[in-house]
Image (cartoon, rainbow, N blue to C red):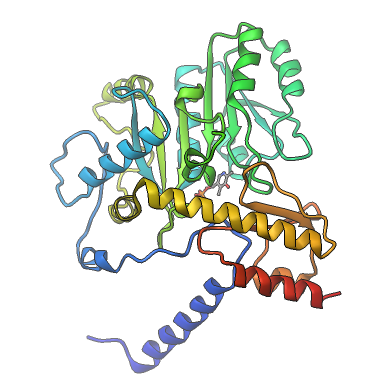
Length: 370
Ligand SMILES: *Cc1c(COP(=O)(O)O)cnc(C)c1O
């Protein structure tokens, strides 16, 4: 059996649409400069990484050996201790965030979660799912957590374990909460029972390559980190990476072994293709290639910010951010370039695939709109 010609034509037309739509977006943090043709043959097999990536399974049509290499590589980027990390390839940054919160809750069932106003919209749903007590902390104008408000709020709850959900690159302004400042506050208040999760959905693939290095990883005091794979690295299927401390996860694994399973991941069946995509990108680009992409993005972001300012637009960006923020632009331009807009602010994200000619074309539209 084959597809009918009409259906085939429809798919071809749809392919053109998707090609156009992909070509013209500048507003979402998704890389489009990937090419996984070499992996095409793997589409013929029912790959599934069900279960823990580090535990052998009777099911063997999997890519878990590649998944483990991806985890080791990311653990290295996030300065985990050599023999105390664990992780898996998730369906995206949100799942890794859910996992971090889940781990924190298992370690500190009476803990309170502190997270800033600028936190990703999926987090309040996760807190609801996990039924965790939570308090929202004010944000500063740049999107970073207001450390003064954190201090005052923690002071009132010194008797409860603190679970800090830190943003390493907020969705709208790419602001990074500073783990050194957060740890200093926890120390000052002598809150010894604490857990810090870093939501590094976008910046997990950027920050390790930028100097001065942002304080966000395991060596800076994070207990777990979530990063999206389809953002900084690029993938045709959404994916992500979760890194946590092995000894913390062992406590969870044990409690589930009690009911007869070593089920350490959120879902049962897991994508077997996405670990291959990530592995391929890491191998193909290497540390130097990955760094070069980040430096390119920073250059383009600087260029974009400057061009907008030259055009009389009040553009700005956080230190070493690839996200340029400016007052809301006309609907036609937001529509054409798929620019996310919230609270009167529009942002443009200079992913590695964005080049000067695209920015020039965007500025041409901006200048023409006035
Ligand atoms: C994109 C993003 C998420 C969600 O990640 P997904 O990979 O889309 O699930 C979470 N937090 C922040 C800050 C993000 O930018």
